[in-house]
Length: 403
Image (cartoon, rainbow, N blue to C red):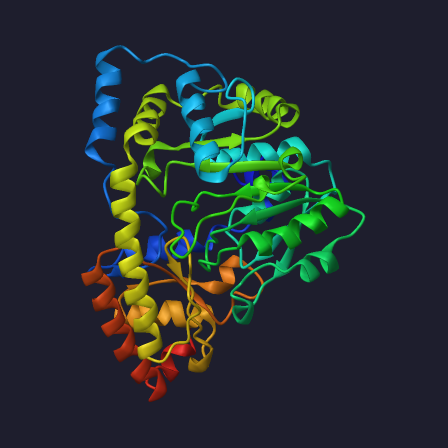
């Protein structure tokens, strides 16, 4: 052995093949600069409501410092079952059809590792959250992105899904409301997708972490459609709706035949989610509706401000109807997404995420999170307007050579 010189070459080629997160790259760059307005990271700017934090404090005072059941606290699973029945009209047995996880991310990983065999294909609409492709790869699957388009409001169509299916297709991974586009799917939209999934006997993993952030109409879970409950894993969590990203409390709901296999992986790797976080999640679900509704109302105000603002400064932007992201087109600038994001950060000190990091169809767009204050959004739009005027005047020709 040559000491540490060949350590890298001896590590897993699968892991070595994965690219670092494109979101993280711009987040790290922005953190090194002063006076940067960040529209980059998908994290609420609200602090977890006080009564939820207080529930955590009290749980510690009462000595809740132990492991819980692998499935999670029974009373929390009961509350999650009630929540899904009330909001999505889907019924699960809290005894063995709900699993509390360390964030929704763990639930997606468990579902993929449970369902996939080596070489199985995972279909998902693109642009897509950056973790889907790596998670599918780590689970031994082959990721297959299905491009969606702004002119279709970035919705997955049954025809596009049908064209992407091969004999090796096994899982359809959905995320609506969508990160990064803010697209949502109506009941009619989902029914067409469900028909295809049933016809081709696909499992569906439905990432509904942004379900509470639906601004026009109501969120519909594909699991609630006829014939879908038995083939769907619903993934959700507390991070976005209750401003609890750092608590890392998510959950999966699925038929017990699937969930019992997910629990096997969970118990050998994680064992259980932290009990203090579970106690806080219980309080959020039981008594957090008022705070949640107020946050959603304020996100909606910000959504209207940023979308109208983009259109006024000359960037076309489809109307996001969910999540807290706008996905404006920057194609009329003549810049690639990477060039636009890097120049905007360096010259105007506004951090956005280049759309191409979310896969096919993302180039020519940037993701802008409006989980920040109205004042910050207004300032960001003013800076972007000045930046766009300079781009039109060709002020960045020399800088472009190095981007």
